[in-house]
Amino acid sequence: MTSQFKPVRRLPNMRDSGPEELAARDAATSVLRGIFGMRGYDRAETPILEQTELYIRKSGGALSSRLYGFTEPGGLDVSLRPEFTSAILRQTADNGAGNGPIRLMYDGPVFRYASPEDEDGDKTRQFTQLGAELIGAPAPSADGEVITMALEGLDALGISNARIVVGHVGVVQAALTEFNLSERAKLFLINSIGELKSGEFDAVSEKATALGFISDAVVDDAQAAADRERIASTIEQVMAEGIGAPLGKNTGARTPEDIVARLARKMSQADNPADFKRALEMLSQLSQIRGPAKTALPEGGDVLSAAGVSEGIISNLSDVLSSAELEGVSTERINVDFGMARGIAYYTGMLFDIYSGEDEREILGGGGRYDGLTRALGYDRDVSSLGFAYNLDAVLVSLEQTPDQTSETVLVSAAELGSITAAVEKARKLRSAGKRAAIDFENSRSTSDGQEVK
Image (cartoon, rainbow, N blue to C red; front, side, top):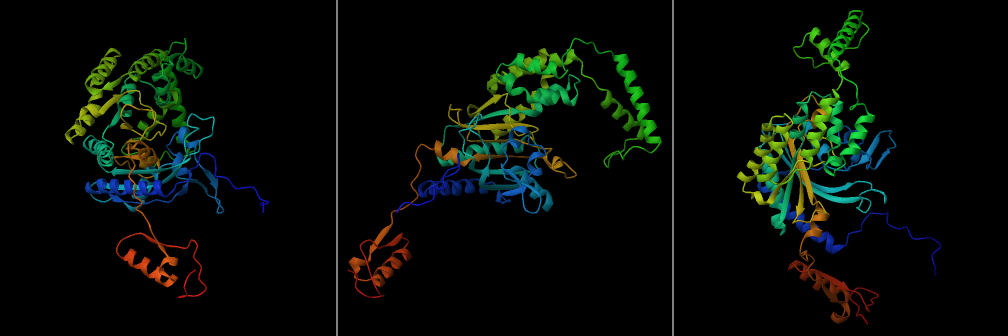
C-alpha cells in the first residue's frame, strides 16, 4: 500500500554517518585524545547551544553570516556552535584561571550554514571538530607546542605527509602601526589581505578611494592641530558642565587632561593619503610572499625594509618557527605565508593551516593565537591563549586506508540449536568471551520459551 505522505528527506548539505564511518571516527578520536593527553591536556565539553553574542563579539562577518541562529522560547538569541574556542574561553574565564597554563581538549559537532551559491556551498553544514586550547601560555614556546601537537596527531593516524602553513597577524599589525594610520584604516587593510594576495590591488584601491582613505587632498598638519584644540576645548566644556557620561572604569593613572587629549586625537585623526598608499603597496607585496621559511623570512624583511619599516618585526614569527623546530618539527614541514587570511577575526599573532601533502584543496584544520579574546568576550583582562582544531571528517577522508573497526558478528541460529533459549545462552557465552554475537531470527519461529523452532 502506497503511503499518503511524502518522505521527509535529509536537509541539504547534511550527512548521515553509518557504522563504518562512526567506528573509524571513534578510533581516530581515541588516538588523538591519547596524543594530547600525553602532553597534559584534559577533556572539556561546552553546550551545543550558546548565546549568539558569544560568537559575534570578535568573529568577523565571514563566520557570523554562517551561524544557525534563532530566538529561543525564553527570548534569548542563540546559535548552534560554529566552533569551540570562544566557548572554551568562556568556560575557563567563568571557572577562574588557576596557576600556570590550562590545557584542554575537546571534540564534537559544529554547525556552519552554507548556501549553494556560496564559495563553500558544497561543504557539509555539520562536521566534527577535535582540537585543543592552551590558555595562559605566552609566545613563542607555547606556539611551538601547539604546532607540533597538530602534526603529532596526524602522524599517529598515519598521515605522515601532513604539513603546516604559518602566517602571523601580529607581524602585519606591527608593520601597519609604523605608518601612523587610524584603527579604521588598519582594519580595512588587514581585511583586504585576501584580495591583495589574489592580485586584486586595483579593486582594493578603488574601495579605499570610495571610503576616503585615498584622495588628492593634502593633509594640513596645522589645520589638524587646530581641530584637535577645538575638539579638546569642547570636551573640557562638556565635562565641566557635567553633561558627559563617565569616561570608563579602566582609566588607570591617566589624568583628566590626558584623557581629554587622547579623545581629541582620536576624534580629529585623519589618515594621510600618502601614508595609506605606502602601507597598501607594502601589504600588497608582503601578502604575495609564501614558501619555505629560509626564503620567505628574508623576502619579507626586504619588503618591510624597502617600505621604511623595521624588518626586526619578523623576529616574532621567526621565534615561533624556532620553537617548533626545538620540539622536533622538521623545517621542511612548515611553510610561511604572509598573506594568510582567516575568516575568524580574533587571532592576534601566529596562525596556521594544516594540509595533507601538497594538496591544498582541503584544509585538515588550523588554529592560532588569540590573546585578546577574553576581553572581547567581556572579561576584565587579556589572557595569552592559543589553540587549534582538526576537521575530523576531512582528516578521515585523507587517510590512505581507513581501518575497519567493526569486527565480524557471529550469528547464532535458533533453528540450528533447537530453541530460542539455547540460542540466547550461546550468544551470551560468546559475548562474555569478548566476541560480537547476535540471534539469527531468519526463518525461525517460536510460540513459547523452550519450544522447538521449525
